[in-house]
Length: 297
Image 1 (cartoon, one colour):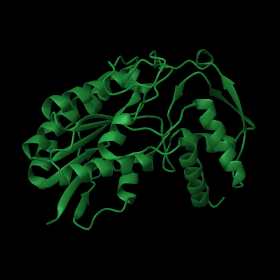
Image 2 (image 1 turned 135 degrees about the vertical axis):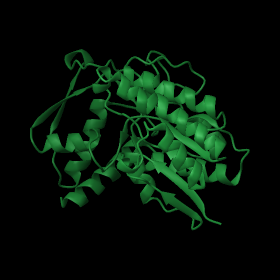
Image 3 (image 1 turned 30 degrees about the vertical axis):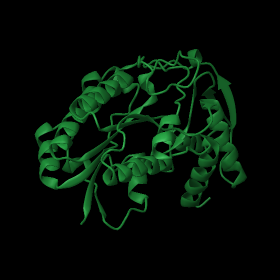
Image 4 (image 1 turned 120 degrees about the vertical axis):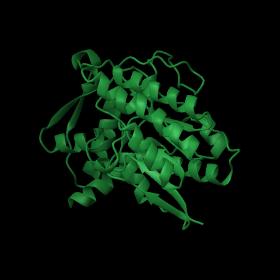
């Protein structure tokens, strides 16, 4: 019997990575384009899930423009804070497993240690507040849903910090990068694998635990550390390189406040699902190699 899985956000980093994974022969992915399913259209979302015969839904769609969200609060909350509740309610009605992706930015970064799933959220910006609202409506509508928080996602596709550093290195000799914000860089491919592991287990075992899970790359870094890792890996493979000049957050003001330290503790996902994050610098080197190969470097 075929098990259909609906993936939302298929053009994003994690969505693309999910499509590239090897899936069991009895799993069929349905990845509608944004034009085919507007998440802010509640009736369309309910109809798609209610009539689709899905065994599971992965919501990797999000409004991710952190700074723009400060002036587009309604748009951010529509996608991040309201739509996920509709999806969760529809999935619960259809008896479909739901995995919803969230973010480290639900925390204020003041703990001075990695955050676990039981720590109280306190977002500093609209984006974080909208994602927290989404978590809450998901778990209210479907308490057994899995809400997976992750952080600092990088990959070979589209616009993200890694691809931006490679582009800037081809344009200038030095790049100023913030060095007083700490987190755990995470490869989009690793997020996809973690989500797949949880999903397949939950499809096979309805008693597998749901709720909040943290997943992020092993280790920690500042943005400047991440930039150096990206550009060193690029230079080693004949790609662009530039000097990374560390700066303080106050030297690079942005509309949205950023938390200073959003490291996520990942012990729960290892305990419950056997998922062990790989070191972030190893995955970054692999992504750089993939990106440069695709660019013909």
